[in-house]
Length: 91
Image 1 (cartoon, rainbow, N blue to C red):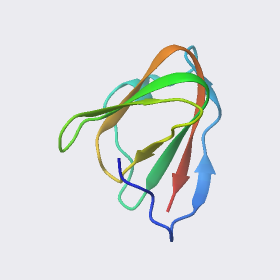
Image 2: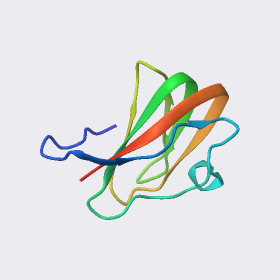
Image 3: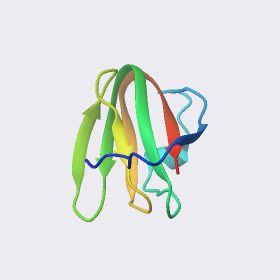
Image 4: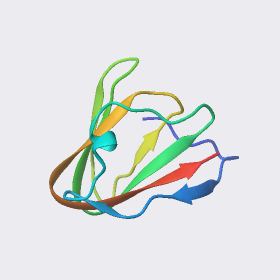
């Protein structure tokens, strides 16, 4: 997983999602816009973060390990039991 560039800063956060409220769009392949990075922050539980290109990578996220989303790279998430998380967008 890459790192968000140092000169990027947070500009928007989603509400906190749970395994019951996570939008269907996040569970299926999707991507951020050009120039937009994101940080997936798990508050409680575990979330599988799957990067789908250029090759498949899987990362199990928890309160001590966040996920980084690169611009325009297909990815999806999958709750692993009870979970709460949000997405923090950077540009």
